[in-house]
Image (tube, rainbow, N blue to C red; front, side, top):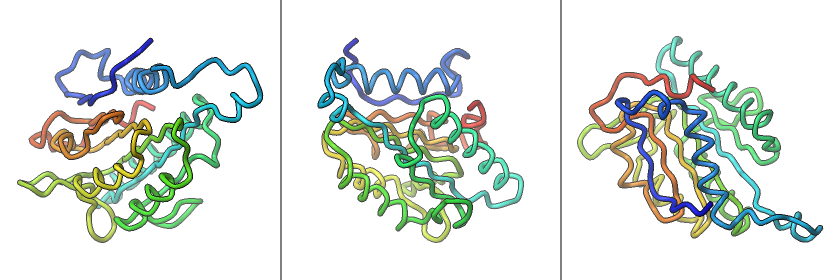
Length: 212
């Protein structure tokens, strides 16, 4: 079914059925894949050129042991959903974490931007890219950023980096507080943005990523 892909904000006051992240993920993937991009593949050439899903899964700094462990657990469960439930190959998943361990590259402003640039150069026009962030975020005045080791990654810098994908379909999931304020900087045609909060005022740590 054809779907116009715009921007989606997950408000904490939304109906319970719509606050289920798995429901939202299915809706997001359906919206991005169902507008004529996923044609029935009936030949080897069609299979070879079929759209692929690439995922950049980023875990921010916890700041304290409780959040560090929580974010690590949520990242592991999200990774499991991607590989086991959605069948995304490991070769199409890039893992960036607060430390360089267990197959993850350290998530810094530079490595996140480099990973986006690399995916932009390696993916085809029909592919879909998902950027998934689990961690803390800051929204104070004009300072809107994801909290990473070293300098934070501003929403504007992230939005500018995502422009490298051109007309490719991009899903952005920000499982962090205050991320609703980042929607204007991240929104673009063919880009669907899901945030764990609807505004900058919602600063309590959300449970959004814990449902996977």
